[in-house]
Length: 497
Image (tube, rainbow, N blue to C red; front, side):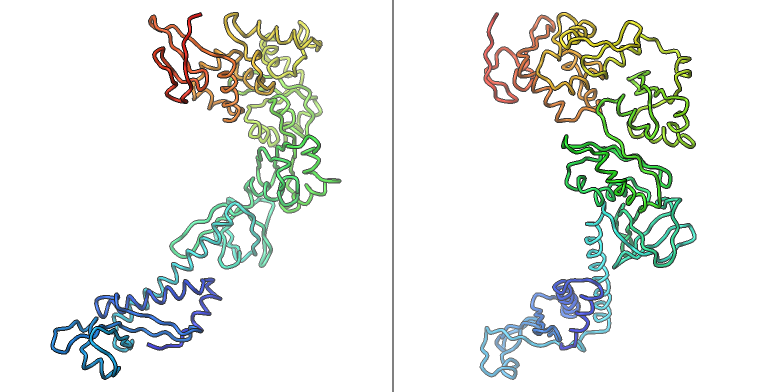
């Protein structure tokens, strides 16, 4: 078979964005399928392209056999017939016999065409899928094409169209023909016909990506975006923290005279963005989250259900709550606390015991700060006395206080927030309990366990007259007859004191 296919191959490479090797491979598969349908096998089919791919030949390899023997017409050829093709051939040699496509029946040709169309559709779909799947979670720039009846917008994003659903459109925005649209690629998936690329203009991740573009410190991992909460078209709050003490995370994100944040706000049609500092202390974090309002005080009502009251001046009340409760609603989502905003007069009418308030707040106050008996005026006390008071209030005499171990003060504060003050209390926590402590990372929990294992040798419990021992290295249960820990391999020696 000889045919001009060079233009067709180049067209597929250029227009369909399919690699040349993949096109050639697909053509070979199609020809082999047609050959097999006609002759029953494709094992002896040979396909050869010219150097410039302008033509291709399909041949059948046949072995030369004696004229007197029975032979397979598909894979063998008698010597007499072979001599007519090549005079010097001998029995056992192989010849390539060209095959003319005209010899194929109509069904074989039609089947090959259908297979060709389907193969190229699948290749194009897979190629597009791979290309845009790599862009999932990234920004992409497209152009408005059309809007359908339900409000969804189709966006030209290059070799395909993206879908910007009505639910992913900001109420501030409207588009006309060929308007440029910068979107966040939310999801890429295969569809029956082509590809489905879901875009978004309302995702909080759109804000994150815009910040990474405009704020070099974020792109360079010097500043971390801890959390973003957003009600698209109205307001966004972004909590940031710096890995470098010399960098102010809020100032870096806002930029000189607010130029960086203004650029981001312009991209989302003027939607307000609050950049605030993340703080591991929930009281300070709540105070920051209610910006731009000035918070006078924050009181924990019930830390078990994460309920707090923010006290503000009368003039700041409407600003702290926001229009239709928007500001406090976003602050709730940002800090994962239920926040009530009250004036001092409103707070005084609430039934909160001073003693309960003092105990709750003592968890979060900085080391060395205490309040007088009325719980109003702060008084300074030595650090040593603070530690003594903490142990007297929360740690039994026969327990080991966590503060006696070389643990980071921040870790101690987090544990105290969950009412964990002693080694015994920590050891008695289940894996589910530890998993519920959202402010403690897995690395911090491992660090606490390692410190306890290093400084607390053996924890003994009397159970039914027997003594239970724990490996001082890994914490696994061991018995007196063991010389090596079965979990970590540490050598064991039991001595009577």
